[in-house]
Image (cartoon, rainbow, N blue to C red; front, side):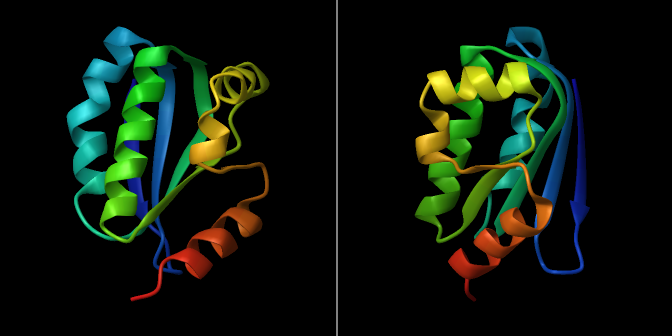
Length: 117
């Protein structure tokens, strides 16, 4: 599992995940993901385009960090998961708690509207 962090020009922190969010993959990135995603108030876009599989363990990490971030006044969205991953997230109800977007501009607009300094 691979994690890349980019601070976009619009103030949004983009975290790109690549690989499998199964137990071993999630264990590889969990601490770094938490530091970048939930350590301070920020708009966070989690780019899921490179995630080929997600298990409940991976979903838990996404959800717990989204809740922690929201508690600090920030917001997290998930961007463009592949169909298999999107279906798993939808069935688990994650999309009701962490918005899922297939459109980059709409995801950024949602984050900017929700997080005001």
